[in-house]
Image (cartoon, rainbow, N blue to C red; front, top):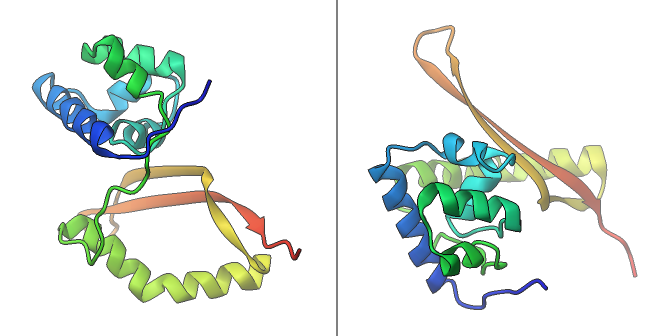
Length: 156
């Protein structure tokens, strides 16, 4: 049976514990995700309290991180999503995404609607990828792919 939380407190505390173990054990998000067979984006979001993990993935993560049975079960509960409190984010990395949406949000909306029609891009049927690539002008660039299924608006 699927269960859901209505209060994000327990998942937030577990996310803090997971991050502490990750740092102490010098693990990467990729190395943790590799134990599950799922994408690094999905597993990281789950461990930060934004998704439920399937039972086998939760068991693998629990074993790797030394979580107890209650914590491993908690990873399987549908969380209350949303990890950024209201207002403008103050963390510089998160703020830059906020800034990108402020600058390009209406452009993205216009282009999506022009190409697909009236609807939305799903954050449920969704994939995310982050890659580091060389910048031809020197340094590095971040390539972030947000790949969501288009869901048309259905009149009723």
